[in-house]
Length: 264
Length: 97
Image (tube, rainbow over all chains, first blue to last red; front, side, top):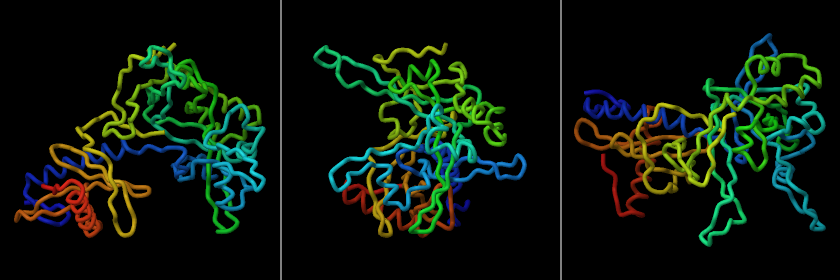
């Protein structure tokens, strides 16, 4: 007899339950999928200010500029809104900050003073492919095929980011927020993310360290933000279109409509 | 963005996701077949709980969290009851160990 949750169970039952723990450990790791538009919390790495010490802290993904006063402003900022005359103001998407414009826009102060790293073991992008419909003609709307992109030799890698403490003037609360920096796509990512040809700025060790600690000039910041990891260092796996609903979301799927990727 | 793993124990989603009511809230639930058992994955706001039905030495079934967590025993028992009610109402089915 053994105990499970302080209740006596047979040894056979106990062993089965312990085996289930392995499955759950796998599922827990596999199911941690952060979707940007959930505006949820995500662990990021930032310097503590004491030497080369860093800390992992959770921040809200979706940079909020200081001029927003309260969550109502945030909602309008993120979703867009119509004023009394019916004029529509477009939403601002601040999940990503483009490297080329990092010092021109709302991110400038954060880029100079509050740089961070976003740890990841993979990210998703969708390839847009024109497919032939039942009538034999090309469909107007391209089909989207998801890919999981990882680094070949690094289980965890680091993406450049900037963060901003945002003060809610009504609740008198601070929420730390961040944006992930994107750069021009390399040749592999151009094939996958063919609608926008962008990818996260993935930093190797020396640049990641410089991004966090060094007193960088504006030109240094732009140079690092624009860094493009080589295609050969990445690996991409095509996934089921409904992969988020799968027990094993990262199972490789082969599509005849999708051209083979070139890692050159 | 995602965390992922190369080791792949066998696990398979069973049926569609459904809602269960618990202490005034509604939460997504998904049945998963693993190692010949059925696990129920319940998604709370920022965490996921797995529960399954097991049996004690006297043959009396009870619900447990996987991995075991004594602090959650009452909550798990309550969730288990809600799950059984849901299955009985929607599928005319019940749970077995």
